[in-house]
Amino acid sequence: MISYFARHEVDKQATGFNAGEDGFPSAGRVAWDAWGGDAGQSWVNGLNNQVASVRAIEGAIGISDFDDTLYVSGGLSQRVYDFIDSQDVDLVVVTGRHEADREATVALLDKLGVEYTDLVMQPDGMQDSASFKGEVASKFLADGLDVIFVVENNAEARKAYRDAGVEAVYSPDDLPATASVRQMEDAGMSEDVPLTKDELLSKVEDLKSSVLELVGELVETVSDLSDLVENVVPEPVVEDVVPQVDLEVDAVRFVEPVKVAELHERGERVEQGIERRELHNLELRVEGDGMTLRGYAAVFNSASQPLPFIERIEPGAFRDSLKSRNDVKLLWNHDTSIVLGSTRAGTLKLTEDERGLLVEASLPDTQAGRDAATLIKRGDVTG
Image 1 (cartoon, helix red, strand yellow):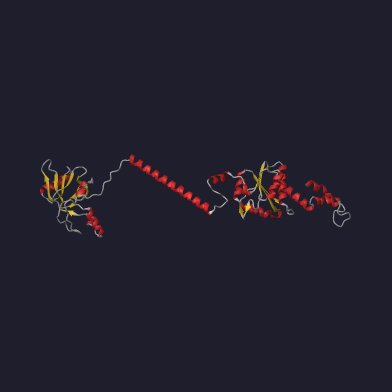
Image 2: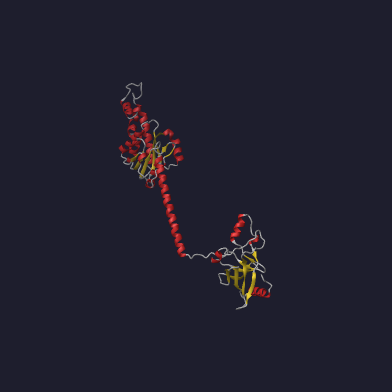
């Protein structure tokens, strides 16, 4: 068409070409108007200039419309752009917008972050955008470019592209799924279509079921691990906190847990956490090495020393404690670093008889043990 207008350019100089001249309209004027006249020439020249700018591209291109295709409801259609990006070819935006709007359109494309190779716009005097787009595609193909796809929202324009010879022409609503979209669809997710209330509730219930199933599996796993640890790791021996029988010059420490609990209920406490009792009939036996201590740590039905309470111990009060495996230690002067005997080592024996809690200990052959034995033998410590 460019060559046609070039051949008939000379007809403009002949008489009868312009209105009011003899012989108007001349044959040249008729031929000129048959192809759109000045407006047709402007359109063809503009189209040629725009296509020429794309000729520098070698190989394959993709074409996309702008309004209602890439640019929808005031923003970028991410689904369309993702599809274009997945094709890995140069993008040429072919729009029905007129050349007069180029500056604003370029600014908008930049704002949207669209990466494109060229922008082809409709000449200002042309209104048939479908025909324009078909002509653009025809020229691209004639110049040896491989048009891989076209994305176009207008049905007439899609037909014009197909008529020009482009095979893959898509509406924005039925694009082939990209790899990322297929992954979302496999996961039951939709990018553009909002879920209905019932669909959303169904998905929430499915999610709750999945979470509960996961929690159940976690509980079962923790239980299995716990059983495994119990079978592999030996059970640690934890020494319970128990009453201690401590030997002092004139007293022995022994506090019943029940009484401590009663004091706690009344808001009272044992002074320094200690109850003192006198040793009765303290003696050392002469058999063996003479280091066997014998005496009573508590006597039944006798009043204790005045504390925040006065206690009388009934027979049987120590029965449960004596049956336990608790390790009771005999200390000198309440000093935990000076141990004179312990039930676990077999050097301390506690027995409840008809009189009270009988203490029998085999004193150690240490300085503290010998000192205690000497003081008892001399009568310095009598109970």
